[in-house]
Amino acid sequence: MPTYNKLIRDRIPDIIERSGKNFETRILEDGEYVESLKTKLREELAEYLYANNNEEALEEMADILELMNVLAEVHGGSIELVEEIRKEKAEKRGSFKEKIFLVEVED
Image (cartoon, rainbow, N blue to C red; front, side, top):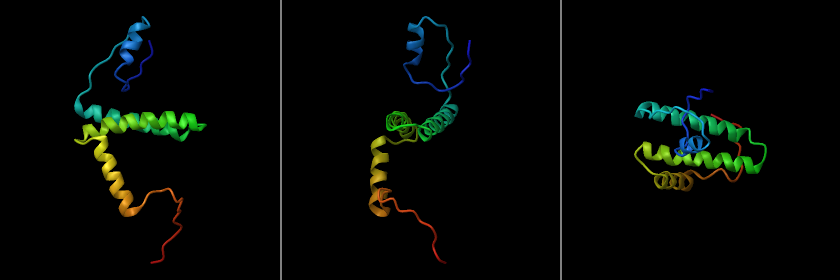
């Protein structure tokens, strides 16, 4: 039986069970849950970075967004609060849409 030792989506155990396979899961403590979410975020970000086309990129971005939703709640907020903070920062400092690349600044 392969060993995974990773955070999975909530419905995966049901899917595995319906396939007739045996499996083992456990519920994480809060600290290891946050660390597992961060690990999963790094994993999904890497998958996004290596996406070969727009469809794959969007699929990975959806996974990242799901993790952002959960992480916002874990940190006492909401995705709406994160969006509010994003908008404030974009208003004050701009976005990244204009493709501006800073080369250097003279002292």
